[in-house]
Length: 469
Image (tube, rainbow, N blue to C red; front, top):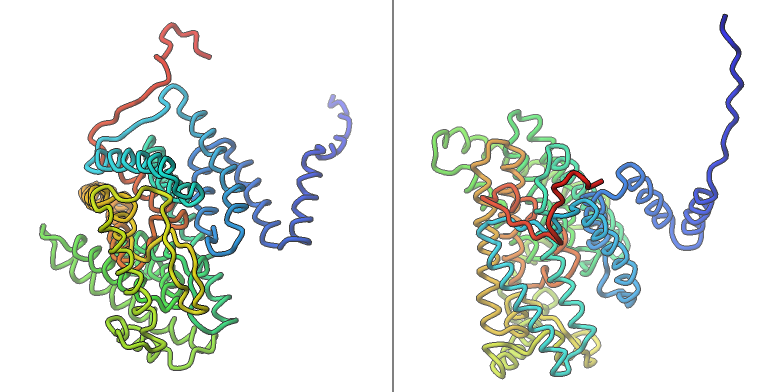
């Protein structure tokens, strides 16, 4: 005989959930609806994968990519961001337990460690000689972001983790596209800063390498279609550095993919198909943007930007060239004062702002290699170039991996480094957090995929008597 069971009484949500819901509503009403939904999304993700290191690192990558260095609220942004960094490190220690740090042996390991050690020494030297502690902290944060690739490399990505990481950074880049398109639709002119960061171009290198390795043309087309918003963001910036870096990264990817081994003709045909699809998507996308955002003569604008790349006559299109040349010559004079070891982190100089002609302090140089030489001298520049070339070599080792997704990630990482090296001739992408954490995610995953061995640095010896909980 079946016995009757008492009806289940609904249980009220705990007080913490009520407080959290109220906080999301308050953020949506009084700050911005994006802030409320962002907090909701973060909590849902952490609820699904609690205290997971990769999840917390991907959140750091996302938040770091949107930090606005020119907003005037950088200190407040970095204060909040530091809380997420600490939580990410906490998740890492919980996951690794006894093996606190696992260092993979790759071509990039030694130059990365040596360059990091030199940067820390120059940070201390900068503080001793009285350089700006605030500026030195910004530069040191970029280095720590790059070094975090060793944390990512502590564990080999599973198939699911690899695909989720690609999806995550693609969605993040989609957010950058939406932000850039929104601001462009308002001001109808090129701008810089967080609205048009290099992050989508960096991610596009990985997406493109996944596209050309797809077996069917339909899947290749879908990957290239997913790449279209990323390219659109780079195009709308009307930044020649982005355009040249994209061209260099795509050509590099194609050369590596085609190679010289058996099946070259088939790979060349697939590469040609991919370029044809990409050109068609780009043409349609530019036409849609021209109509939707009201950009008249879009191809003429793009042509003028390219044509002004080498111009020195002071016009609207070439004015940035003149300003940059003045800045470069001033920085070269400063480098001559201390060419071997540089001036240390936190060093700044005074320049005249090109629009209002006011004097401003500037800790950065719109040229990555001059920036490194100014702060760390020719010694630092040599180590910097060695490290970047080693990252490319590490990525190229992955082209022999059996899994095509792992191949695409590794070669995409090498193309990503090429992108940053080319863009570094006109800007400083790896001196800010926007690009560096995404860069470290790609490099860290690649280092573990191609590592020949690993070195585990433990807090203490493992317990072997079975008494470990």
